[in-house]
Amino acid sequence: MTKVTKKLTCIECPKGCRLAVDVDNGKVVKVAGNECPKGEKYAISEIENPARILTSAVLSQGLALKMIPVRTDNPIPKSRIFEAMAEIKKIRVKKSLKTSDIIVENFMGLGVDLIATRKAK
Ligand code: SF4
Image (cartoon, rainbow, N blue to C red; front, side):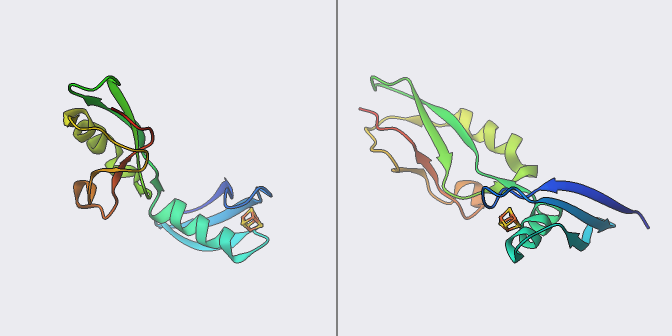
């Protein structure tokens, strides 16, 4: 049994409430310091299933822009970020793209799309 209190800053709005999160065996048991329910939701997600939007760049072939900036359209688990970076390195874009065009649908089976954040011709 390991009970600890972790300090987090809620990033759901500009107020940036300082949260004190009691965690027992990896599970959130109490959240204090939040001024609205979003803070508790954020703390639970951050402790129990941390996720981030991944931003990176993929190589192109035959396009003027050699590196095309990309991101996932929704957060992916932090635990899969390194694997995702390795997958991104394998991608070669060969056709023109507009901003927000999907490069890989359901990227790594995670239920998110990898999209271009810049057009490329
Ligand atoms: S807890 Fe609510 S009020 Fe505080 S930073 Fe998070 S979203 Fe904003």
